[in-house]
Image (cartoon, rainbow, N blue to C red):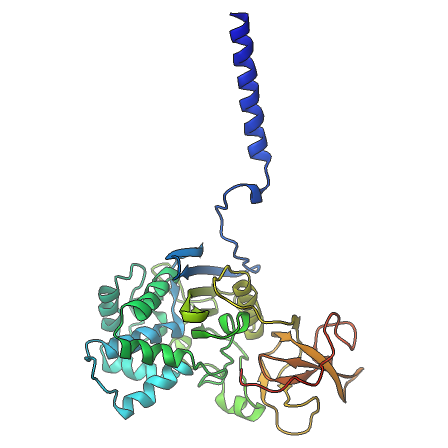
Length: 395
């Protein structure tokens, strides 16, 4: 009996020891219950990453949370227009002239045209039924005319892309995805829309981006073109940003990146973000970039280089390390950029600073003076000197 009690006591002690060990074991030694998403301070995010090769999600964070869609809803507008057109349907030239810039350059006038012509909120109701969406809803009462206030979630966005890739008629798939693969850096309203997926991963990718809010400066292109383009004027941005309905936040600035990444569109990525009121476009652009780079995206190839913050407004990206000639584009104020290498070039002076070093930005295919980089030294640390083989490329 004494032996039995001793054995039981030893077993109990061993069990307690094992429990203590398990509780003390590092997170890496236990099954991961939380996603690896790194969300910058102050940002609210909804994320879903789906691996089409395995049929599983590799990331999910608030994936059912509803966000105002901003321009991501334009995919649904295009799908609704193309629905039941038949395999031999040829898109009329007039519609192609609207649909292509709506998908590639996020043209707002085109979206407003189809929203009005095809029934407004009824478009969303139809697409919810057709695709089996669970979190998508039309704009709230009082905002029926604002297509950008359609409620959408990360997981529903994955469902939309899965339909496009796996179930849509080939002509529809090829048209929509083909245009998303040709996403332009400068959107129709002169906002730089290559944040998130296009910045985090090398091609191949296809993207549909969204942004909404009182961003002061998100322009790209030349300064003159940027000034002419003015501030964002989508239906969503014109609405009363103090409004809120059905749990969907309509006040904070929104920035979303969605699409596919990798050969054969292996991964579907949906990242929806809200930022504190007053956040600059460059800050939101940087934050969604950092979040997207933290994701586990199967099949993705990460670009080589080092990320640096920038300062000043309307910083020009030049075709060579010199201020001569027209700039290729301009950076959103304060945005983080990928630097591939650096080279000596024309001396640039911004009192009290002077710098002859220039950073090569492979994602822009051009150069920016190091004077605009957030770095204490003229020469950027841990960045190689360009070897002469770098050349401008189409981002």
